[in-house]
Image 1 (cartoon, one colour):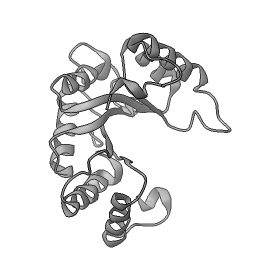
Image 2 (cartoon, one colour):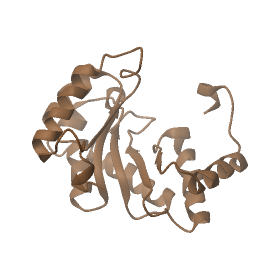
Image 3 (cartoon, one colour):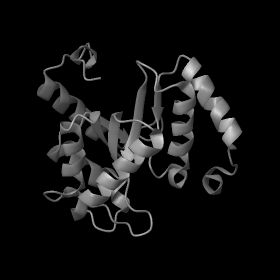
Image 4 (cartoon, one colour):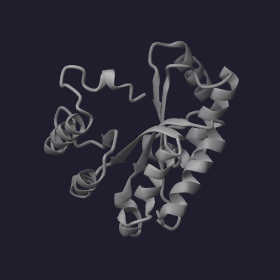
Length: 197
């Protein structure tokens, strides 16, 4: 994504980085169907193949994405995005699957309505194809109401919960209370004993 970051990563450099990742202490990798318009998952899929598969006890997170040309993000597009991720990553299951950037869709109701993209996300989990589902986006005014209506396992908010920007404080506090109440987790374990993964 040189237009965003100002430089391009060669395939050789990407594979060396991913090889080192598989050898190192970090055990979680997050990507998206639309990062680099699919190139991110392609490079990761190649690295997984070279590694002989996804390592045990590592966590892979990817995302359901809208059609980047049309902005469409209905249930059919959500499933298409997921199927493309599985094919490209050369896997039959994913650890964490997020619904990604709904604020950029052409029609938010495609996501939130009955049998929309969110229903499809949770259906994928029910089918046993992912261990956890999440919501990854920026705008809190859209994210918070969605969070109140759905029981996500994981949340990512882009740039609204940093050392300098605390706009997402209320939302994360709400999410923590909702999760602990729903799963009866204690605040000490933070869910670590729940065997969610």
